[in-house]
Image: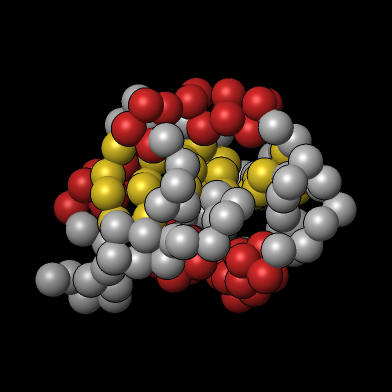
Length: 147
């Protein structure tokens, strides 16, 4: 146990988050996602829903403000306009932890390709379809440094 860090994040996730550099991405995927097949580095958090894991990750990791998109979700049933309830929960966690960022949809195979290229994948126990999100890591500036 560590002060100020949720016990939800175990040593593997903490190591991944610390080792990631600016621009690296981490994916949180649902229970149906082929995580073992797609992950370069994988940690399993099967007992937890994806929005809960997202909130814990964003409690430590900044999103990348230097690019247009830093949080990505799949398009549900091939429709990027379709709003699944899990997407609203992702957006609420982002608004709480990283205000000003939006959730960008990515259609079909390009979403899978981005997960395959991610630094790490967290396999959640999320049972809702399309409960997947990719996060691009930003930087923590030196106090007093110009942005």
